[in-house]
Length: 194
Image (cartoon, rainbow, N blue to C red; front, side, top):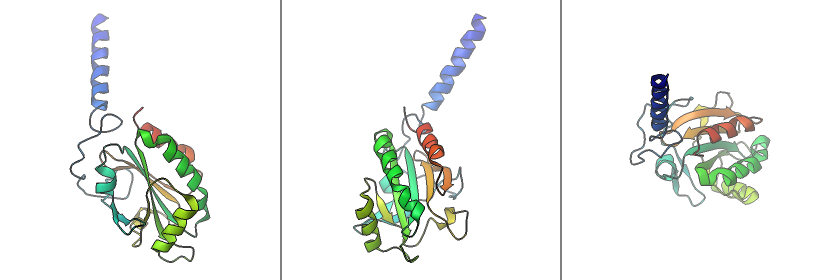
C-alpha cells in the first residue's frame, strides 16, 4: 500500500511539474522566435504572424506586439465590421473581459475589416469605431481582410473571435457570431495563470 501511494505521489508530482513548463498556464515559454509553421486557420494550428495597422498607421504584428510580450498569455483576436450590429453589441463584453483579465495575461486585439457601407475599412472608420467605444485594447485595421480564411461561412458573418494560446501561438478556438460568451470566457480562464 505504501509503495502504491509513493508511486501515485511521484506520478502526480511529475504531471504537475510538466504542466508548469513553458506552455499552458505555467511560466511563459521562450519568446525570442515566433513559432514556425506550417500555419493554419483551424483549432490546434499555429496562427501565422499576421499584421494589421494601428490608428497611427503603424504596423501591428502578432510577433512583436503580442508574442514577444511575456505578460501576454491568451490572445482574443476579434474580427469586426462597421455594418455588423452584433459586433457593436459585443464591445461592452470585450471591454469587460479585458478589464477583468488583462493583469492575468489576456490581450484583446480587434481588427476592423469593413465599414458601414460594406467597403474596406479606412483609418477614418477605425478612428470613428475607437471614438464610439473607447476600447482600452489595440484596435486595428485589417484592410486586406487577412482574417477572411478563418471564417467558415461565406460570405463572412462577423463577429468572429479567435482564441490563441500565446506561448506557442496555437489556435484554441474559432468562435463565430454571438451568444458564446460562456464558452469564450471558459477558454480564457482555462488558459490563464490562476
